[in-house]
Length: 171
Image (cartoon, rainbow, N blue to C red; front, side, top):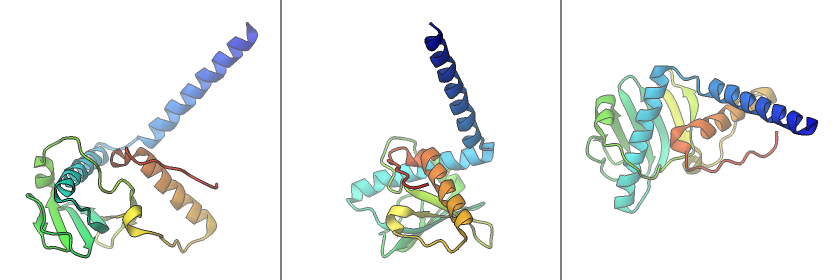
């Protein structure tokens, strides 16, 4: 019937729109894809370590640069796991050490990890919304809306946020 044909055309158009939208959000460069996979591997490895220790420390800051990753902890996080360097309040992990971590299932201890931007040295700066609590954005409403929308997209698309349930309220 004509109605079934129209419904089919609408569903087809919706499917194409969804594919185009996903392609736009997943249009990472090869380097970005490699960094995202590395970060997910590191986070899942830490999730297994924290599970064994019975405690997840509070993350204050994560930075990523050409040397690797640096985790800043609120309070003492304990000694760094094998492959990591640092002390009770700060752990570092080189890219080579991150690449040698075993792949495997495990919980991501910081699924609400978002990118704040770049530091003066060019490192990517990330925070965990669950550990951090409220963040204040000092900007005009259009800029605030754009930042929050970018965070929502990051949380919806990041491999480390796969277990996160994201609810967006308002608009």
